[in-house]
Image (cartoon, rainbow, N blue to C red; front, side, top):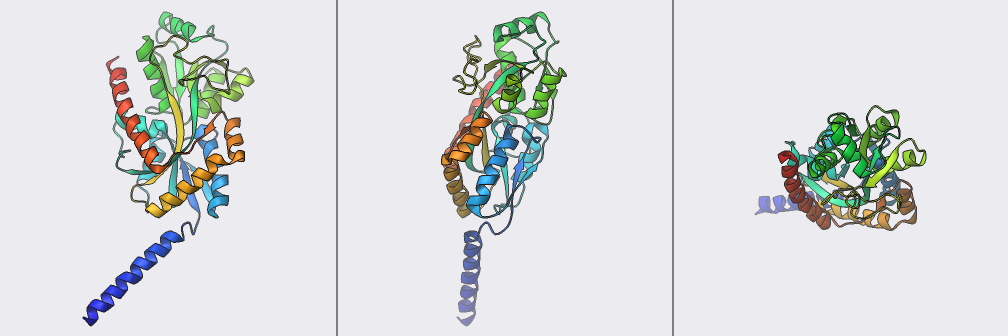
Length: 319
């Protein structure tokens, strides 16, 4: 009985210590992994979020870029990190909902990650080098068909949303654009400016400054509705491509098994962040909209997207 009593006391102490450790989170710096190159939509979103989270959580938030394979490299790194709340990922729809159903990845978005919340959303923008005789989506389609294999497009890497949004476009229009992968949306956009590639379906964040400088020509947005940041651009569907819709988001995920108390505290911080006027303004300046979802809503959204993209990838591959 004496030994049993000692064992029970020991277990109680351990349980108490674990609870105190969770309650004390965060007690050191947090690493926020960006699975893309610096300067793009996800990178800028992460730096805006990091500034807010540092104030709300009272700890340093270090943004670390781990680009590669359309976001797969960084997302995989976080999925395999210790589930202690100190390694998080500012991930995107491409690496979470598209790539795992389009190709073999070493992580399963429905089993290996802990969704915390979406923080922003943004449409992709179809941009072309202004030297091309293309000023609209119908002209892009006509030019591509008249010059098969000639038009090239830049993306954030094979398997990313930028890649598959063009493949979906090809499937819907009968075109065949040539893929040139980069390590992020920003370098892919820069390649359109320089003429290294002819076009890109890039995030509004990367497209807006270049459209304003007239170093690229905007043709359309890929969202369901026109963007308030570029109201003159039609949607791809408005421009004549039936059943075409691609929207991008950035959201924070953690490794599976991250303590519920940590997820709840992060969710609370993200809710405040989405309502913060300075954050909203900062997102608006890069063409994005601040968003808040609960962890449960985020998980349901990923599940829905995986199912949707599974069907679309089948269409793309068939074409």
